[in-house]
Image (cartoon, rainbow, N blue to C red; front, side, top):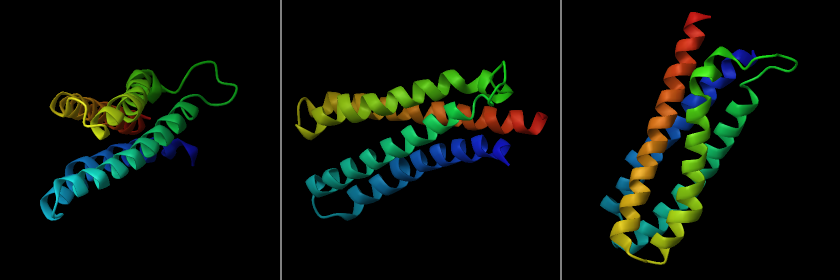
Length: 139
């Protein structure tokens, strides 16, 4: 039963990044009357996304090694670095970049940095999902 959790967690992480970043937030800017209103709501959605990412990554780390096992799981050997990188990116965007955007401090720069870091987190999640699902097929 627990062998399926890493696939579920990786899919939840990647899917939530896709739905928030590529669907919900663009819809806010396309449909709300003021960009400031859309930006306020986008910040809330991205904050919620951060906690989803942290939870998924933390649980992936927990499931990367069985109790009393000497080595980490096969999928984790190929993906653990991307799990950690994705978690760090989520935290840096939330606590380093987002406050600068909310304060409207050099908005163009910090929005670009945040977008790049979000895209890198998405890539980390995609690699983790690919490797976890691939390792499961081989087992």
